[in-house]
Image 1 (spheres, helix red, strand yellow):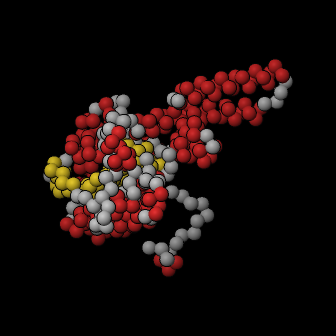
Image 2: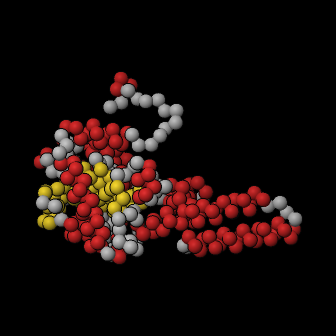
Image 3: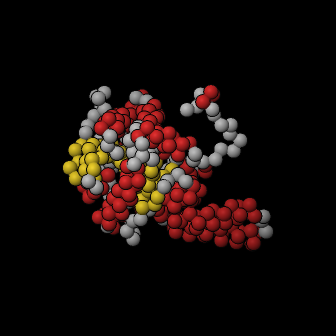
Length: 320
């Protein structure tokens, strides 16, 4: 159901409630007010939900598409050295804008078989351990790191929980905060929850114009708050998950323009925009002293958000 369909359905219900109230003399003011509020929120949030749909478009460029369009000589590395090779995350070495880089990203897949094999980009613990191994290789040789985020979230299966998916994501975040080499992150499609943040800690964080980045999917948020997944468009507006929202909130550093209609309408044009932004930020970071990067990166992420009534944690209290 589109946002327009849902608005039309709610407006019909609203008209019916008003008719019943008028003809039967019943006081339905609270119900009418609630429906009017929902219609207003949906109308306001139409843009956010539309962008969620564009971020999920089946023809949207994937990590491997961008690597093919932007980089030369990509050499993929496999395995986490513990017996797992999660294909939901790809990574390796490549040449980009005249320099060797390490690149890591989620890979959703195109056809049904590939999506099943890659779990639509939902990585398990082995995927994040593989990503850490590849990124540490970049640090070892002084190569800058590029990560491309495109996942609905981490894999939610029983096996992932049994193998400590939460711990693997936490370890990856911890490792990225301490890597002594430049890191540029780009959200190219879906940026769902910890699955996205697991490779999302960087000195610069970019977002494609029609990507989204959120602590939870709109459907999941709607199910928790209202027990009704059809209210996802309202949740999308409330979550402030669009690129321009997150730029205003200071969560990201730049919105990368997409071709009219979305990246899937002109993958080469989208790749040119992304490539220019990545090159520019890598150039800005090139002169940074490696030893300064972890402290600056940590300060950047600790400075996000406002916690009312929070007591700052000092080094003596166990902070870092």
